[in-house]
Length: 81
Image (cartoon, rainbow, N blue to C red):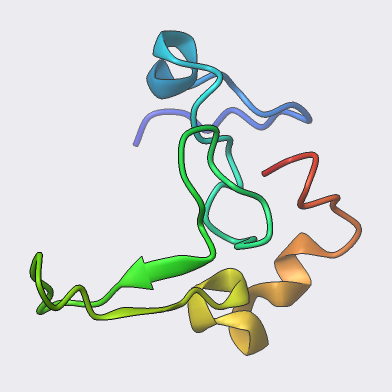
């Protein structure tokens, strides 16, 4: 490591440059905010197949709420999804 650069603004990523209307930076932490093309209310657990999709409700913070919820304190997770 040669240098660390700290900033108060989130830098743009290549994904955001290519398709900004897709997932935002906090995309998978709030299942109540849908992706522009599909719902995030359910997820598929592996193993899964066409005839047995193994769909379960998506949990807030992907089930790690106790460990990471404090990192999102004060953020509007609908706006910054």
